[in-house]
Amino acid sequence: MLVAPSILSADFGHLARDVAAICEGECDLVHVDVMDGHFVPNLTIGPVVVEAVARAATKPLDIHLMVQNNSFFVDLFAPLKPGYLSFHIEEEKHPHRLIQKIRSLGIKPAIVLNPHTLPEAIEFLIEDLDMVLLMSVNPGFGGQKFIPSVLERAVRLKELIEKRNPNCLIEVDGGVNDINVSMLKEAGVDVVVAGSYVYRHPEGVAEAIASLKQ
Image (cartoon, rainbow, N blue to C red; front, side):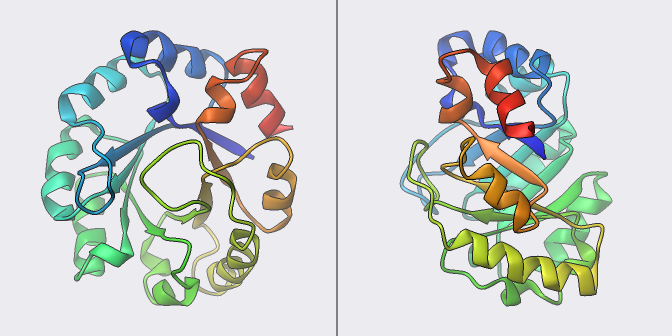
């Protein structure tokens, strides 16, 4: 299991320290949640802060856009050369065009599905993607409770991926911990995002990441 800790749960007063800690703790990606206060009822960080995150990180950035006007935000963050850049299908009128744009910038494109969105909604986009992110909470805030139906959605998505593009990864974000991670693995999930679990683990971030990998 690949682990992408979410810096949304980090101490922003010591952001460089907390980003370095997860990288030293053997995370695989650094998950960055960008919210605009319109698509979701929360406002987080812009390119100035993400640039500081990129400087502190020794692992690829996994930027998750929860915004309106996706193309504008892609242009903002593309110069930072993240490993992955994901956008919500619910907010994009021309997803295939945006996927092509992201890939042309040398970034791996990913699509995000909210808890109510069926995997079949992106069946004919899967062959152009490097990853699909399934939300296991409603987007906008950290620390929410895991929605179990994501397991069934992951299984359905895995079937589509095996048919359309076996190299496409499945990522799950929201309420992930050392208890449900084994169920996610069985459902075909490749990458888990964990914020609160990693940064609030009593034994530290390295132990938290290790427990998810194991």
